[in-house]
Length: 357
Image (cartoon, rainbow, N blue to C red; front, top):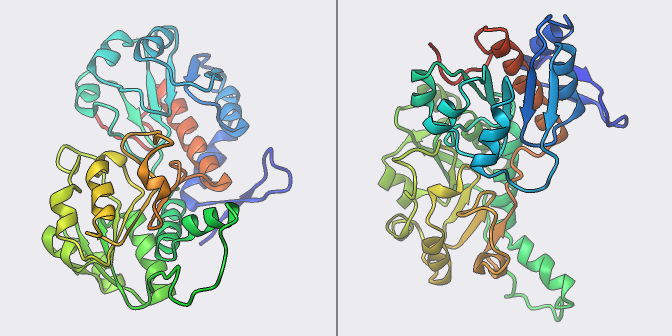
């Protein structure tokens, strides 16, 4: 794939951006649009995103405290701004939109948009952007990492070393499970699921089955993947990885009933949204050997309590929602978000809009 090399505030690092980010960088070079508006960002982002907005003539304010803004705080702040770049759990609902009707552009610093009421935004003609297409590799890498770490009890065994418990070698102790030739089940075979499947096929020759609302015939041809019913997915997967959007249908879908239909030797991976699994049921499934292991980059709720039993289990690996946390991915995300905001403030359609009207 052709790539653009772009150096920024990490002088030792050269960033390779995906092709769909290149036109945005070239467009940004056109400079000031002549429109001077105010943009609020709910997190500290890289200077690249700030510079794009400032070069377009806008004033940028970042929320610098390491705490979540309350809903009322966010509303009161946004009443004085023209654009919002949002990252975090704040609910962008009809009440928010009506209270902040002055906003001309909103962009979520994520590909998911389950915290925004898109129907209400569209009805109120509030354009919402997001940052798709640049985080598939990083998130798939995280799912792959968790799969491998769980299969060999890596986090748990690392902790034992730190506690001075390496101890006497026993041939039957600390055994994991092999992945070669196993069946990977993907719930939501989109871009991220596709990248994970390619990695698993290449590394371990895994068979791929999947469940979507609609069949992905292109992926079937590319991967030799088999479309399965939801119950077939549960019953046949050795590794079951979630990559679907959080919706009313998928919220809490992976509960006691679902885990009871999985293999006792199976591994459950969630890098999508924590609310898709019932965490108490997952803990019980691991404690009762209903399933073999679990790897989570998202939890229910977030952040996870330090006393959560999953953190002490040999067969569980938990990460703090870092699926997109590479320099390259986060940089590409803020570039897309900035260009969405710039376009929205000019009254144009965002390059990566969730809704259209």
